[in-house]
Amino acid sequence: RSLPTPPTTHASICSYDEEHPALAEVCDVPVHELVQRTVETSTGVDLDESAFFAADLSAVYQAVQTWRASPIGSRVEIFYAVKCNPSPAVLHLLSLLGTSFDCASSSEINQVLSLPSAPSPDRIIFANPCKPASFIRTAAQKDVSMMTFDNADELYKVKRIYPNAKLVLRILTDDSKSLCRLGLKFGAPLATCPGLLQLARQLGLDVVGVSFHVGSGCKDPMQFADAVWRARKVFDMGKEAGFDFKLLDVGGGFEAETFAEMTQVLSDSFDLYFPEDSGVRIIAEPGRFMVSSAFTLATSIIASRRAHAPEAGPSVPKEVVEQEEETSSADVMYYINDGVYGSFNCILFDHQIVHPHPLTIGHKLATVAPPCPPLPNVHVDVDLPVQMGYTNTEKASVWGPTCDSIDCVRQLVDLPKGMDVGDWIGWGEMGAYTLCAASTFNGFDKSPVLWTTGGSSDNARAVRAVLDAFATTAGFR
Ligand code: PLP
Image 1 (cartoon, rainbow, N blue to C red):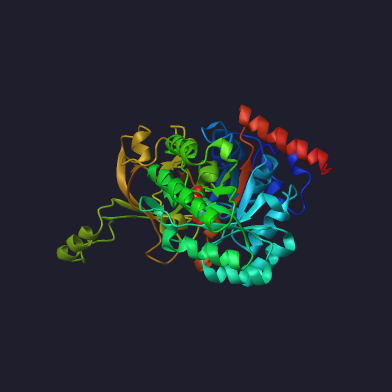
Image 2 (tube, rainbow, N blue to C red):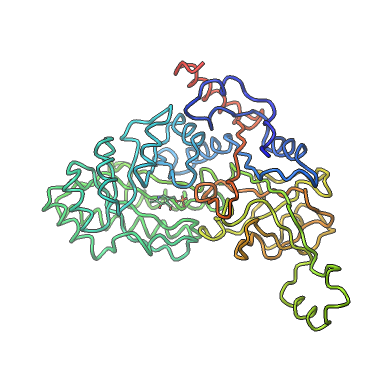
């Protein structure tokens, strides 16, 4: 079965887009209501509806505003990391808000350049230091000249295919405190930089600056201070090699929790090593920070098993029952309609711990308003339902729908008693590295997205104004 139509469609945004269907159905109710109304019409034992995302464009808008109001906001340009969540509606809104883009493949470049609000090619950085030759050819054909490298082979390739490219040297920095350590794969160690720069010089290539990435899910803002210091060293090496670098790319790794601290550390480091009067242009490639809170996933319980179910009848020996009980301390196992092969791939690939909150209990809407978004600080030991005030809870394990036992979403989490097949569980902060890496393994479809501009908040109104203004000028209605 498909999802019910989202309530209250915003007509002026929806009328224009045949090529970009995701932009065509943006409603304008608050995200809580969107989730609740959809869940309400889909609750009950016989309604095994698909899981779905509710995506709130006003949260993306808020992220841009937060960035621009931060200590680095007036200086550091956003090049949104498309890989993190390439939904057309997100890219379209960001492009209209004037952000630029970090693409890592030909198809990401093509996607950005074919947006209805396509940016000019100089608003794209091809931030993949190890590109197939054909990707470099695409970049040349599309005039996307800014690209990263971290090895000699890449320089020879660029010389052959796109000798006028504007090269950015990706350096290795300390990422030991980050959830995803990109330095294991990318980044030239400082010791190799003079040699690379000399080679670039010999090949007559144009190296314009330095980039780094402190790792995705960076937990220690001081990694940024160290990285900027290293970048300064490489700027000096560039000078010795005869280049005059004018670009610093501080990559991604930003998170809402540590954003204030990180941007302050960066701002202080810029004052020290790249002051305003140095004339150095600074860009960043935030992914997670821009989209994480904008997406809430709603899943329904498709099956459940009690740990000490009556199936363990008189014919099962006591020792066997005891041994089986030892292997799991959950009172109940819930099976839901999305899992680690789908949207929850972030558990495996992105090292995330996801946090459930009940949307319905016993097929009735949960009385406590769901915390989506904003979530309270989710990196806590106390499970969300307990934080929300539910006292009558039990230990549950939550499993995805596939036939693989790796498909475990939470091994042990407190959920209210009384939840049943047909009830719904919500998951906040699901916008980053979720949808984009989901598979259809075992024949389970990817969860669809319901879009909203976010309701009646100032941000929501601003989003509608931006989308409407574009639709009018572009003649889409
Ligand atoms: N830039 C590059 C080159 C990346 O590889 C990534 C993530 O892998 C990002 C930016 C985005 O990082 P984040 O989502 O942590 O901001």
